[in-house]
Amino acid sequence: MASTAPSGTPSSKEKKYDRQLRLWGANGQNRLEGAHIALFGATATGCEVLKNLILPGIGRFTVIDDKLVEEADLGVNFFLHQDNLGQPRAESAAALLGELNPDVAGGFRIDSLENVLSNTPGLLDPGTTEFTHLLLVSPVPTPLLFRLPADIPTFFVHSLGFTASLRIYTPTHTIIETHPDSLVDLRLFNPWPELSELASEKTRALDVPELEDGMSDHQHGHVPYVLLLLKYLEDWKQSHEGHPPGSHSEKTLFKSMVMDRMRTNVPGGSEENYVEAARAVMGDLRTAEVSIGTKEVLNDPKCQDITSRTDEFWVIARAVKDFADSNNGLLPLSGAMSDMKAESHGYIALQNIYREKAHSDATVVEGIVRGHMNRVQHPERNQIDRDAIRLFCRHANFLRRLKYCSIADEFSNSNDEHKKAVLAALGGWDAEGSLIHDYIALRAYQEFYTSHGRAPGDTTSGQGGYEDEYRGIKRIISQYLQDVGYTKSVPERCEKVAKEIIRAGGGELHVTASIAGGIVAQEVIKIITQQYVPINNTVIFDGIASRTQTFEL
Image (cartoon, rainbow, N blue to C red; front, side):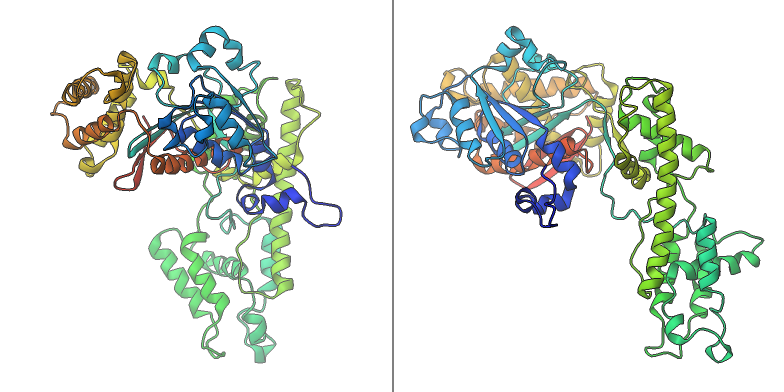
């Protein structure tokens, strides 16, 4: 991505993408511009997904489809028009999609997924392919899904009538920037010397009346609440055998102690900084703990066994683990601070204490990273990205690692975790309205299409009537429920959704395709940018009730 111009004015690209840069920054935009999406199936839904990826500026896209444009396409796909009738669908869609953003390179290939996998497998070989992500839109026979490369992130989409679904598969997905509500970590129970010294200096005359050479009301009302809490924590510990307030009742007493020290003979009858301190007691007075997500990362075998082929993420994660192990379990400080009542110079002094500590911790982690990379003779040992290490340290307690079940495992009858997930959804308190029924109906559609080579309810083939199709779909549903261990009859909602899918006859509705395009593109962007937390691994959309639900299946 183009950098800011020397004059300090934003570049043309920064102006163009200003709003999204506020969401995922330059790092995310660079990853987006490095992506090459392969769309298999130039359907209305596929084109809507690509539209929502082209507009924010993916690097490249390739539309792969072997069909010609038909009349049925024109009513649902806004990226095909009357003049395209009889022309290759891939070429026609790619041309109009390419007009959306001149910064994005587009292309097409008149081909099918089956032919690619059988005759040009190198096109999807993870070692040589140009494609970074695969987007598949149904119908796709199940055996072809099993043949997809496991090392390329894949997004499989259904869009039938008012029902849509997305299934994601990607190798282990790691996220540094999960964008939590706050990165603030005040470490009030674990202050370092510089912070303790500042608190002691700025609160020395805190409880001395102004007439006895104490603080003026203005000074007293502008002591940052962090320093107030540190001061009163020391007072508390002196009368509690050195222990900070831990239980809810103790924190309530501590809160009262803080408010009792507030000056009330001031305009308004209270001091805002003391009110902030009291408000922060329950949230900020806590022992520093490593989050569940970060624990999963630090305990992952990839973090333990560093080799010359280990990805940068895991090398830094190992360094962070080593840092924590040698610092009583404390992670590198984020350096983030919340806003608070204070004079500018007082706030800046406190902010600098936190920033300098964060910088110091990151420097230590960087040294550990260099040590590991030199030890294993890592090929990138001389190209260590200092900014990446600092970013990692800043978000160290908000890391995530997602492991996705493969599509083959999902369809395996021996997958106990899948069975448990389905049974839990069917037996939950909201089972009657759960969209797990929509998943089951879509799964039956998938099996029907795989075995018949056409969608249930597709009248163009001249095969089977509605009742015959329904009986066939219901048999598949019954068998699936039996396989997962469900002993009751087919749920009513499952039957209703199955009937709607048959009524759709494999066709799309543009309104559903448009909404699905937004849902899918959002998840694709999360995976590409490695920011925010994507779903793991299935999301279902019910267009009739306008709601979604996610499942890990």
